[in-house]
Length: 199
Image (cartoon, rainbow, N blue to C red):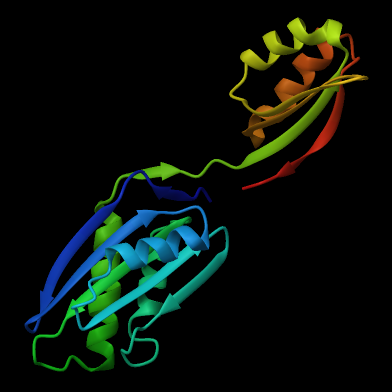
């Protein structure tokens, strides 16, 4: 199953029995990104700022004073139900004077988050990997020409007594074609360190 993140931030507001709910969602890469987003997007003057995030299989949620599992868990369920990853959602509630009950709260928080995500622009999550290679100085031109033909980002390049060492980041599905091209370009002189998936 393909997984998406958000292309950009999104928000959605609803009113339920005079309580106002505002869902705000953002793409995030780390838990620190998510917590920074919650701190920035939440309203300290609101009754509750409940949130959840899911990042590469890791997740957390917070009910911020609402009854247990009536806010954070439904928000997380909305993220997972919409097939999102690397996404953080905060739903802010301004209390309107009428109690909603546990079921009403769960529907309001989860529904507001789900509608926010449903309407948001999506971006496929591409699995990335890191590849390290080492080669002799005389192969530099051929190596750089081969790398230029692939969607690879150069993270590091160092020159040592035994030649050049480069670290690249690229989509997992571009690894095999790049490795073949590098071997062909250097008549198999390039030394490749097996990649680590980093996404």
